[in-house]
Length: 450
Image (cartoon, rainbow, N blue to C red; front, side, top):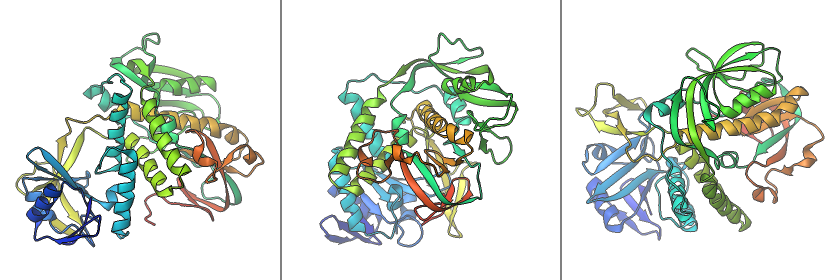
């Protein structure tokens, strides 16, 4: 691996080479067979040859849907090398470059699968190795219409804020350990089939449009509803009424448990289920536990990053975005601007024919994680003690049950199985907004750079 700063490229041993342009950089990269890390692609300490890369036949400049460059894939004679930013690894561009290279080297050597350009690609590579290692069956992606149906009606992590705006001298936080990993091991599989009327005996797992009738006020809602309109906000209804929602089988069972009437309409069902992903879950969790036991917190943190990114990767569409120069854009391609400046290239969407993303696995994982949070939070909501929930944690009015739980960040916590609830006391808590919590112990403000 190497680090590029302006026109100087540094190898891991500190050796520096001065480059005179993009072609010189690509010659260096392919001769040495190395991955290049850059601080960022735009702004201060940016990649110096982004314009040349967009025009180069040897490069694909990969970006987000909004045109934020994430990496450059360089190809020559069936060989591929990568140029990636610190931001692709959620690392501050102003961090020490040699320290970052050392951390990546430690991660790659520990996991033993070579270098990968992003945490998600590393996690997916480990997942593919796991399937081969245990001689597991191949699982098919659902067809295009099924993917569209799931993606269109996908609901993210659960958020409740019944005590929004309030302040507390003391509160108890309960956090689900390795939440996504705890719910990724069991998944729907087999042929995905659309239905107009559900045959319960034929589909062990399904996802469908439902109408739910709530007869009386609930302490906390068991099912999500996406509101119509510009915001598209997701809520969990607690008041009497009729609601339309897209639910998995388990969510419908939760509705039945609290006495709700559910009418099931059109949806998609799977002919089987599988525990095959559990092998990857166990292997990657074991790697994380061993790293913690060895007293390597940075390595443990990076493995956690790989786990979350790999599972999140399954929620991506089977497309990717590249920057193309002016004159090669399609009619609907987005013109790129950054930092108040306009650039002579456009964001172009391309089909990823090699994608192994399983959107139904991603949706199912998020749903089961939200259900676990619901079942944990429900007793506190009934007692009037639930302050807020946020994806994989619940904050409640201080009580006397905390002694039953392992303390978060304690030496015992790192070996707790995925899905274990961990405890931490909060002082001077302010529930500013949904998902925004400020206390002496933590400062959770999504979208605010710290």
